[in-house]
Length: 389
Image (cartoon, rainbow, N blue to C red; front, side):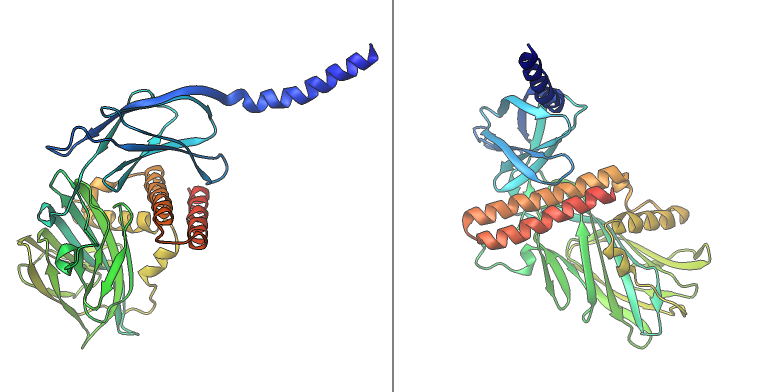
């Protein structure tokens, strides 16, 4: 009898923790359909959909399953999931990837995933606003820091992506932006899917895909003044509905084709000189000349913002505040999001980069060692942003 009692106690001791761990598990079905938003697309096309999970308290990404659509519909049946794990889908179409995060508060049995076919027509790309700002300057080193925020639109119904395998590929096939010759410390970020930056002495180009809709690109650089002036030819290959130049200087002078000076405004202890122009055609340019910079005893470069993952939020909030006080339409109104949304977008970008790494490994573009090093770096970055947000 005593032996039976001990066996029973051991059984309960072992079994109870096991039941406790599995208490939050459940069996579900994830299903839905893919909607291709491109006109005259191939209606018989199949789409590959991968299901991933992120383990709780880590950023380890594990592919659970994958499937192909049948008449645009898909389903993952009899899945055992844990509520403490996060899940997401990656849908592939013509080499482009779309992430769908699965929120625990939504229904997962009737998902709608929107995709677009790939296109190479740059005529669908336009710049609605180009804002160049010099928030701080230092005449000690004769150098200015420049911040640029661009609102970009894809007016078509295809995701633009440059064909990098094109034999006669040129800069005219790329999303490109001009910079003054001799620039330094270039930093570029955007809400576009992952891509590469290609620098040349007078600018840079991006290989990022551009889905239909409105997007933001933000970049900064530094440049030496020449005869106490900052001047260069600002080329606008995609035109611009509006160009706005801001200087943190009470006596600042801004010159350029089509630019008209607005009323100077005092914000806190700083005076801003502002000029604005509208309706710049494609392949037009502005010969910019900025002069009469303020003396500065101390200087803190805006590039220190880029040492932190919060720099985008800080910069965007700062610019929004300034432009709001100037009673000017906010140049980033379409991207006013809270930290959770910013975190979500940043994580999506990193997840897509990891997915691209897997494709590169599979195609032989990188070897196993390179994959492990790069993948580890992205995983650590995911862990870092999770802790910060």
